[in-house]
Image 1: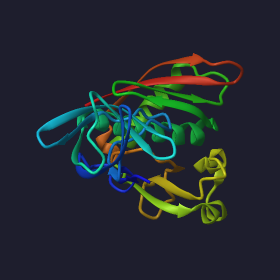
Image 2: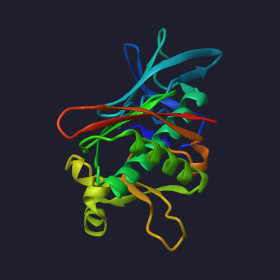
Image 3: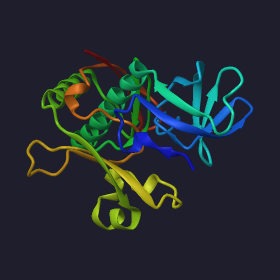
Image 4: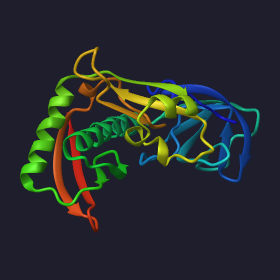
Length: 242
């Protein structure tokens, strides 16, 4: 089973690993910092290099383990490779994913609107939530509040927690634990700090994605629009800038 380095440290840009096996154009490594598609976050891209050769990593998927799709004939099993992420792409995903956590928590707190889906990209994101309809004043207020939370530069942390312990201690609906398959017994909890160290976290969510270390790294949030997604469901679109 591939060791997912990104779960402990989202800042890793380069790493060494050993090829465990290959399947056509896919490579399984003993460890990786490449994020596989999941949770509304796209996969990382980048390169693997060894002995003067370089392979572009074009797709990363998690099934029974993590598979890296590479261009050309892959390196042989036993090869030691250096992996390097396309950091601009990864960091953009980290910013957008953290902003999505802020938006989810804000909508739940101020509109009692639970998140029902999300998708982040390197240049935009969207979030679906259970709500009747937002108007222009709502969107303006949401944008203002999001940027206040960014300016607060709140710390973002993550840790692992046994599922049974999490279900006893945490609000399972707010953390969205109840949406996870029963087969997941060890959870990764992501927290965004409250206004003061004594406060409860502004957001606490079960999530395996990658995030920036503080909300200040998100940048300026612009809410670009909304869309009705059927009965009592809304979609919000937003973009980030430096």
